[in-house]
Image (cartoon, helix red, strand yellow):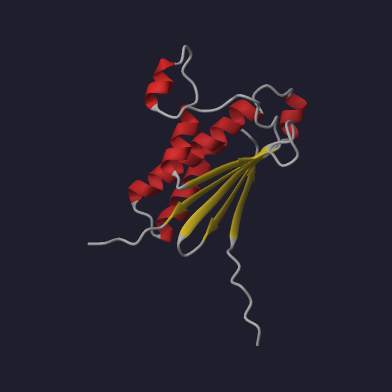
Length: 156
């Protein structure tokens, strides 16, 4: 008998790109993280990284859209919990990643900017183990942010 690969269930949150959705998204991410076995501290860091990612989508991907297009847009968060990791994708259909726009690599760089910005990207890359951005069809077609946090066995 052929053994089928185990499919990892996906929790797919699809909501309007509005800041009042962030509390619900944070709650789901924190609950799934802790149920998987992350400590409360690690779950908090994952929650904060996802919150920053979603906030960036709301502000940057959809922030300057006209109201009609914004009303048709969605913020999508896909959560996959496996035995050794939590994989989360934040997906939008907004303006895509602008050329030359990037977050900061250090807190010093953040404070040295004339108009501080980019801290969200710093938080995401420092709180998660793997981070990748993809604009599948080029600029103007949205972005997929993939984040992974590995579950490490507790020693003690």
